[in-house]
Image (tube, rainbow, N blue to C red; front, top):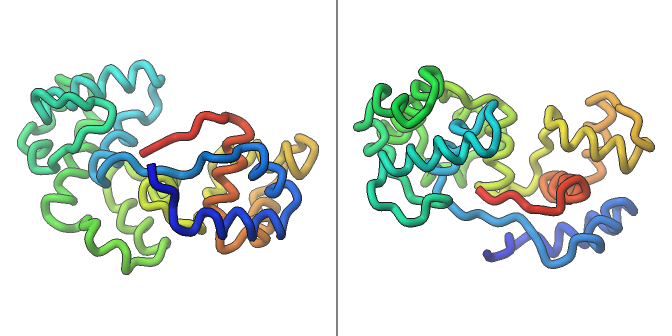
Length: 215
């Protein structure tokens, strides 16, 4: 997968500004953020996987893809059509193993795309805060999910997901000898990483789990 155009510049500047970041960049060479799927598919998968185990989410996702795109070979990263999902309707979505609430969420997401309330063609002109607000208009998408989408799918370089437990744990581990710190402290630390807070967060996540996530 292609490296984001800003990646090398970001790692150099983070390394110069922060000794911990310099060490993490050296510790995890040759890997970077990567995008695998289209926007709708990535968001649908994020909703499907909420609050259930990875194994359960994978099983539900496979049934969901089979219903929405019969015969699709690439189950992990299919290309889903929002109109095909709205055509399924909530009852068919529940038959895939989605709870009634998640079926409603996925249907609402598809409707947002079909009606143009979410249009990826317009997103490049939106600042991070505006895109997060637009995503949070979908049922089942909160700020954390929107931030993950901006980092992993949109490859936005300067998102700091303060509510992410992994980020909190890694900051405590690397900067405060494992002691839990306030979100305001993490926010201040993040100021030293601007305009590459997504990249800094990504390296902190790698220090906890070397396997990189792809959307």
